[in-house]
Image (cartoon, rainbow, N blue to C red):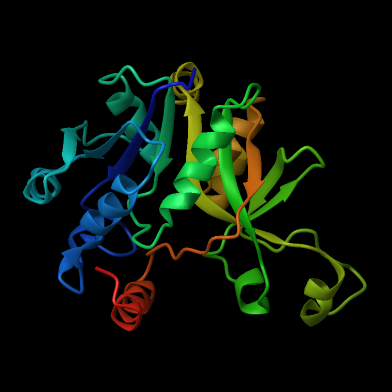
Length: 251
């Protein structure tokens, strides 16, 4: 029997790099509404919930007809926010879909849900092969190194592995590199456990929360996906998404 699954989308109003980006217009729909719309197209999700810290986002989601819960404004991470929201549902699997992924493919969501239904996976995420040097050396593109069983060894903003004897431009020719896709699956009890962990040294250095989990001994499975997506971190990302929506006539 399949375990009940909830997709929870954390969304806060005051993003540091792009203030109020959740409400930014993308060709007639706000960013958060576009993320919600993509999540609602998932075949395997039993429910989709936006977890926010602000009434303006709540009103925007309700106007679209979505489900939304208000959470504490004091959470330091999206994981803490969804952990609070998860206590309001009886779902056994929680998918943390980042609130800045307006072009996420619903099949990606279903791919991660399918993997989370398998035994032995307590935290899961996705990664995609890097094909361009500009992505490999972009600090906004998070890289992941995995073992032969798809378990994450390390996440970094740096290009890993590094080739000591080769110039940067040749690295892609000698190794496979993977970018992390910002979506996580958690078994319910594990989510509550990781939300109690204190910030770690590696996490602080890289500004990557998943390193806190690795440092504390949790296993993060990283499954390869072939669907592409664009997270919105900057005004340039936002404009890029707008152009894609216009060009591909995405409703």
